[in-house]
Image (cartoon, rainbow, N blue to C red):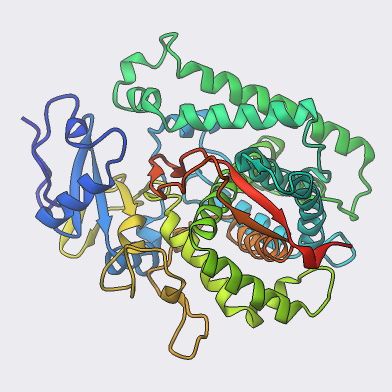
Length: 472
């Protein structure tokens, strides 16, 4: 019989070897976690295999751990398959230590300060938007599957920032890169990854999870070739993209004891590619469902956009303060879409306490972000899509503390700033130029999602109508 450590959070009785896995739905465990929280409290424990994990529920509990006690809860588990694939390097899954701090600081500074003589982040997004608009206009009066459109657009924006170039959407190298990362993500969060993590004895067997290592190495090799090309063509001190910035950093630290090296660079680039693609493209697909289901909301956004733009050809990120309703709709799509419901798992960096419970060093911690995004005490309309969740009585945009789709604290999503800019600029441009409707041969889609580390809408087609006011 498995016994919890003294002072450990309570939870259901686990079975030998498999723990509580059979008590969680494989298709969507969020309702099971809610049920367990109602029984055991805001902090409870489970066993996934023979290893215990602690689940944090609700805004107050999550904020106390990840913000107030950030240094104690900002580690990453070292037993995940994806952690072994990346060897604990980069920023997403790296241990909470000097290398992670230096690389996160470097990445944030570089992304935030793209400009100053270089092509700004906003310019790169607007360039990709022109290709999105052209593709949509070619489908005027028709229907299309938005999945490839939004995924390739989000991928291209991050490629422009880190590789210095965008790809044509049908470029075979680009398609291979995207498909490889999609397959890798599916393997890294699927049932084979779970088997890898709870049954260490199986890790060296030729089972399907081995393909995840093969794909990652293949993508790394491609990225290394791009870095080699950059070395040949770069002008030191005049960076074109994040690779050049990193190579400049290597020059600066060549004679120092530094955590910067080419292996770290490759994994940092891939971390950024992953962080900047799936969640953003999935958020757009969730947003489109709500806009097609709620034509009144779509039209109100269009009117606000037209009033603010006043004939200008392109929006600016600075316009967001003048568009409170559009901002509210975008944020509500993130809240209601609940794209990353269980965040990226954390672990404790030392022996610590939380609300009277004892958590040993290395305890895996799962922040249930979904519980905060739908918490009844935090939202006016917690279980329905309603932009009023982000508007005060005067119609001004407000952001409640429970809004944490990117997580919170030191390990908040590295791509948050880029994602916010993409979501605003693309949404404004598309709602200004197009109306989106359900195709005549498709009923409105149930907004329920397919559960996963990235929770996504079911596949669908959308109808595209180019607005007459935008015709040249």
